Image (tube, rainbow, N blue to C red):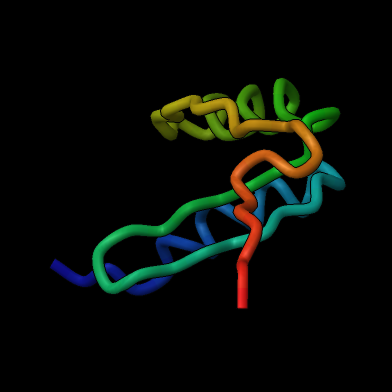
Amino acid sequence: MALTGILTGLTAPLADAGISVFAVSTVDTDYLLVRKGSFERAVAVLRGKGHTVLEKQAANKIGEGQQEIKK
């Protein structure tokens, strides 16, 4: 099964809707990140094109996830 064009199939409808994305691709998975203010619209656009969307809210607190590095 050819998997060429999967990312384009996801990003093109979002681009057509004026929604900016940040794409992260690994050897076996692609992630699309969208701004919080565009999230619900992005989900609606993708579902409208027949895609399944798994929603995961990222932490949105300044400094969360960072650790102090001591030298």
